[in-house]
Image 1 (cartoon, rainbow, N blue to C red):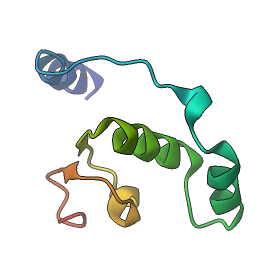
Image 2 (image 1 turned 90 degrees about the vertical axis):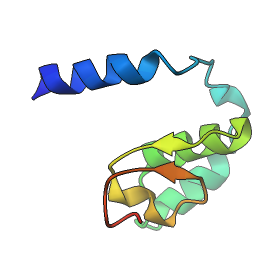
Image 3 (image 1 turned 90 degrees about the horizontal axis):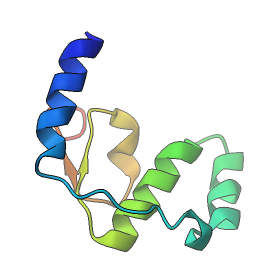
Length: 80
C-alpha cells in the first residue's frame, strides 16, 4: 500500500509547488484554544491555516477536514 501511495504522491508533486510553512506566523494561541475543546486536530488546523494563508486547495481523503474552511479536492464522499 505504501508503494502505491508513494507513486501517487510523486505524480501529484509533478504538478505542485513546495513552500515554506511560515509556521511562525500561524495563530498558535487560537489553534491551541480550539484544540483544547477536543473538537479539533491540531495538525489539521495547522494544515488548514497554511492552505488559507496561501490560497491553496487541499488534496485529502481525511474526513476531519469537513468542518475546515478551505477548498478541498477529494474522492471521499463524506467530504463532498
